[in-house]
Amino acid sequence: MSQLSPVLTQATPVVAVRGEGVYLFDAEGRRYLDFTAGVGVTGTGHCHPRVVEAAQRQAGRLIHGQYTTVLHQPLLDLTERLGTVLPEGLDSVFYLNSGSEAVEAAVRLARHATGRQNVIVFDGSFHGRTMGAAALTTAGTRFRDGIGPLMPGVAVAPFPYAFRLGLDAEAAVEHALRGLDHVLATVSSPGETAALFVEPVLGEGGYVPAPPGFLAGLRERADRHGMLLVLDEVQTGFGRTGRFWAHQHGSGTVPDILITAKGLASGFPLSAIAAPTALMRKARPGSQGGTYGANPVACAAAVATLDVIRDERLVDNAAAQGELLLRGLREAAAGVPAIADVRGLGLMAACEFQRPDGSPDPATARRAQQAAAELGLLLLTCGVHQSVVRMIPALVVDSDQIGEALSLWSKAVTSATA
Image (cartoon, rainbow, N blue to C red):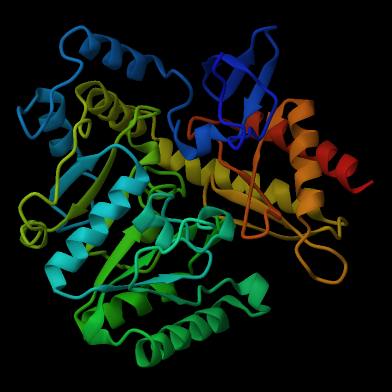
């Protein structure tokens, strides 16, 4: 008898049999408020009727059309629709299955386009678990232990994590940019550096938004030194932060390569990188391909996802509900010394736990997350030390559901810190 790998543990004890909107249901019919959204995937909610209908219709027509062999209409439709939401100038798209694959493709493209080998990432980064992507990941040793040697040519610079640095946002940006300049002077010279890879909001690293000045500083340095700026919007994209893309919060920064995945197809495996056509042409023949990329059913679901986000104004809803969520989380944290910081952007919110001596407190974070699950609220932890509890509900969440989640969270915190 086979079983799941014992290494693949679950964050909650729930066995889900059905999903609807922001709720999951188990076999006994118990309802859970899902503020994990499949790790930020089901932006339109579980089983949105328009996404379901699009996938069912497409499955009856063509399930697999390998897109280096034949083209198909959902692929063409999706590519045209992405043109309406992608940053200006990023007019060429390459499709894959997962975020890690898209990161790998972006590394290949950056190296081909620049003729340089090195890549700079930032403290707390998460770019995936495949060998190249793991080399770019610094959100915890658990993602890279025991598999070395990893891909060479990766340097790490500071991220403006203001809370952990004990600085305000402006000072944290200055610190991080000085650190990047130091890396360029001591570890990876500009002439050897192909690209800067950065998440506009650290994901697994702790849900830490990058201040706009940081992204602007990266853009300036990339332009000055002939490096590419690659924005990993796998977790932040498709409206999660209250803008369609997280990098659109005030910096005016446009990347050279944008990576997207999770929210792209409401749960169907699909990812992509986007770049200007002139840049994409610099990828060498044979470097882009894959059996399942741009699957017709996934592409149809992605088109429906874009329709739902537009027609239901879900980006605006994410901004409004995110403000409500953050305000409530701050109120719940008042008078709770164990919660040292509440932060976020749109529907990407987090509470960081620490001990009285200022060190990370993963034990209390875990107790709060587990207590919430027992009460019917599904959450996840993150952060280098797993001392952060994150909330990532579907973009369809309403104010009543935010209120319900905040009530359950307050009870969970009280239980975890008693």
